[in-house]
Every structure is written in structure tokens, then in C-alpha cells.
Length: 154
Image (tube, rainbow, N blue to C red):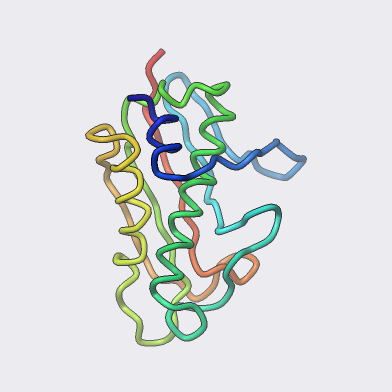
């Protein structure tokens, strides 16, 4: 089953994205390595959740935010591979950042939602190394940001 079939089977939809003029690129493809810049829980140009976990954003909503971040990562991977996400041989690394309230020390449980979704969509190829850290703030007051690195087949 292709990754696109798994995405559809899960009831998910890749976002439609286009590269804009910014001082950085949303992804970098070098040989067979694809790095996707940190993605926020944005849908249709708007941040869906804002604030710190768990004071302003529940842990359940933060996990949903992490899943949306991964869908945005995959949207850029789709763009970078010219619509050939099945070229992903392996998810190498995921970086997850969670804007946390003072005393909240469970950022990894939030980023787990992103990791679990990648494993669901890519199977064994979705297994990856990871960092999950709590931070004081994220761009646009987002509660979660996720980045990823992929190995691609030629």
C-alpha cells in the first residue's frame, strides 16, 4: 500500500503548499536526503492552536497539533519529491518542540503523536531517531513545532 493510500485510509489530507519568498527554504533536498524545516500547526494560513501546554492548550489538543505539524512536514516532502512521497525510504530524524507552561516536563508525550503518525503512514520506514524538548516560546505563539529528515530512494 502506498503512503498516499495510507494517508487517505487514515482520513487525512496533505495540505496544498507553495514556496514563498522567505529568508529560508521550507525544505532542502541534497542528493537523497530531504530536510523539512520546522512546521507549525497551521491550516489554511492560520495557526489552529496557540499558547503553552498545558496552561492554554490541553495535552490532547497539543497532540493534535503535533499531528497537524507532521501533515505539514509531509506536505513539504510531497512538494520536494514532485508528488512522490513513496520515494521515502526512511524517516531518519524528527525534532519536536513544545511550548510549555512552567513545570510541565512531558514534551515527549506530545511529540509521540507525530512519531506515531509517521510510523502508521510509513510502517517500518517510519521508525526514526528523535528529539523532543520543551521550550519557552515558538513562532506565532504556536504550542508545537516539528521538523523531519528523510532518506529518499533515487
